[in-house]
Length: 203
Image (tube, rainbow, N blue to C red; front, side, top):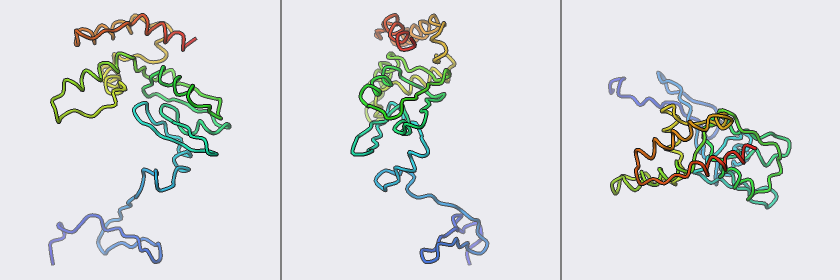
């Protein structure tokens, strides 16, 4: 008999016949979840109940009553007229969210954005493209160039800006833009135009 330390760790089995767990003698119970991506396996209802937000760099389609809804920043719960959809303390590209809202006629009308949500600026997206081009061939990420990576870099460096900062801290936005311009001299940023657009969204 082989030494005990060479025995496989995953010893929890589920019988197809009785559906009850069966544990091998001396083994530890391990629970395995299959098919968590839902998708083509027809578990979209579970994903809707979980109400998870997607992200501007992904595309998730929900079909309800033969109507297609494309969910990026807003969770699929937005199709429920009795539920308030909330964008939490994540990263958000405001122009992208408003564009998403214009393309979809959501049954749900209540949508809220956390004042702690970090802002994905347009120049974050430009920097995302520059960084992708600078990577050596074969080592690029295949990014969607939606600015998610640079925005989270700003967040981790504590130089990013949140929704609440749009109320008064516009100088901080200018400082952040100048920081990126110092790193990428060819980067063109019209920060005043971008701030004006964001102020209109806030209004």
